[in-house]
Length: 83
Image (cartoon, rainbow, N blue to C red; front, top):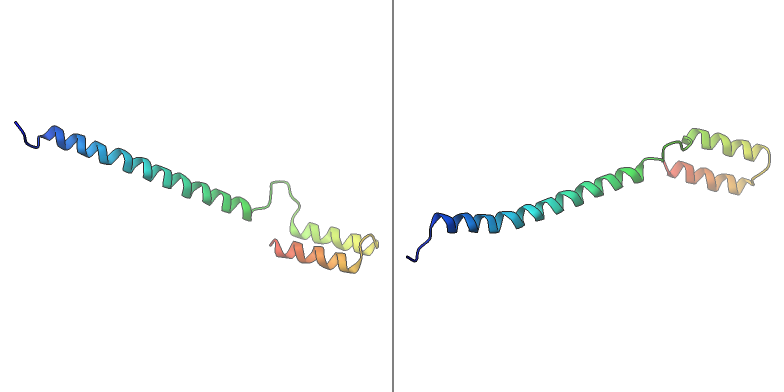
């Protein structure tokens, strides 16, 4: 009677395989989610004006004297930093 049967092996395999599979699934989901958030952070939102359009708008505001030279430079630097 006492001994290691095939059923003991199957139960042991399941007891180790199920938690390992769950841990692997959690890690895979976490890596996948971090990849999405990194891509979302680097891409501008859909429908957002391009950097060229934003720079043209800033130049127009400056030429109409609606913003100061310092404000123009600050906003221009922010647009260029987003590239």
